[in-house]
Amino acid sequence: MMWNFKQYTDSVAVISDQGECITYQQLDIATERLIENINERCLVFSLCTNSVGAVVGYTGFVNHNIVPLLLDSHLDFELLQYLIDIYKPSYLWMPESMTERFSGFDSIYSDFNYTLMKTNFDHKYPLFDELALLLTTSGSTGSPKLVRQSYKNIEANIKSIVEYLELDQTERPITTLPMNYTYGLSIVNSHLYVGATLLLTDKTLMEKRFWSFFKEREATSFGGVPYTYEMLDKLRFLRMGLVSLRTMTQAGGKLSPELHKKFAEYAKETGKHFIVMYGQTEATARMSYLPYEKSLEKCGSMGIAIPGGKFTLIDVDGKVITEPEVTGKLVYEGPNVTLGYAERGDDLIKGDECFGKLITGDIAKIDEEGYYYIVGRTKRFLKIFGNRVNLDEIERMIKAQFNNLDCASTGMDDKMYIFISCVDEFLETPVKKFLSDKTGLNPATFIVKQIEKIPKNESGKTLYLKLERYYE
Amino acid sequence: MTNLEKYINTFVETFKIEASETEDLEYQAIPAWDSVGHMTLIAALEETFDIMMDTEDIINFSSFEKGKEIMAKYDVEF
Image (cartoon, rainbow over all chains, first blue to last red; front, side, top):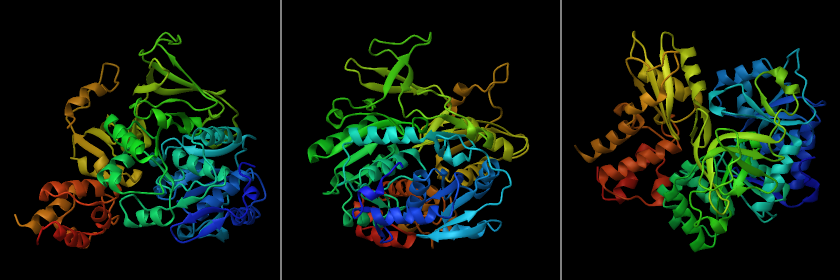
């Protein structure tokens, strides 16, 4: 079992903004009741919201050797159906309000406004014994590429996080990130492990009800992606006087040095902790943290490896870099490096393909005291509001939807440029709408520009650098 | 341009919608007005009317209509 709920019996496990207040004992009973309806190790799709039902499902499945794939409940329906077709889950666990969309499946159990539906696939893909959980690599594009996490991965990462964040039962983290997102999930995982109280809400920082819930239930911590911190800055967060707040963590992309400094100074002045971290779904969640005592001195750094982990930098010849200020490929080793990927149902039986070593895809350097700094990346993806979005995947989606069109997708974090060329029609607006609809991301994220021709080299590869002159 | 026209125009420009769509508009009613869009909208209103809004007013700004009441606090009259 991942979480021993019996250890904390009368402590409160979760409080929702709907007024629910559930103890560890009640959570334990709820998970047992749910699992009675599933009598075998199998695959379940769990459509997540930050709610009691979603937590009951997730913890129940993982604690009872049932493998969930966590998805955003707002995932585009067509993309969801595509994933169901590919992986053929035995069950779906979803908000009650969504069940009518799945007329072909039977509802067999409901609790906390969530419903378990049984599918009717003849074929079931076998599951590797150590496989605990599946998460998407790029949630919003509906790519079938999933990360396979083991029970050992999750437990190892929980233990590291509990140690370096010094978590205990008195913590009350409030959700600012979705549960199906690895960073948001790591907060759920680690806090339930120590018997703390989760404050669950789907409200955004821009809503009054988020802040009244925060104050009423005395939240002690939250996590945020760079965009969260930009919003907090806009909200004049530093003047909000949140007495109960102890810790702010940041991950999901590099925060601007100005904001890093601003929040680090605020934390120092008010006796709170501001902790910058770095991680990936491929490493379960976390790989590094910048100890709060160093947050000002090492501004812009992603810190040091978490307990149990190790970084190395590799140069172009494959040699280990030992001297400071030299950039190289960042490699991580630790027990939280996941088993590998799945791209289709047959991959779910695969064993460990990574052996505890992850090429992160980031370029980094180290300073004289051993603190790491990310300076670039080798892979073609952007971080959009903390979510990794694969640029090649975006191009594939557009080309599949629009005929007689060529496109190239590039840009910077939180701002994606899509260049299209099409002789017949003017397609900027339809492409923008298509991307926003499919990914659920704000339309302003996508800057679509129709140009005469996508620049390419002789072998037909897109010359992305030549597109930068169109940036605004 | 009157203040009302400027106010409507800020919504139109920020969310790329028609002026006729602004009147009943509420937070999260359209994809463009999510938390990301909200931040852009507030920044645009602050620039247009040369004001600096308080936290309370930013998080209370839940609809086009509610926003008008809030703007009045900053001496923006319609």
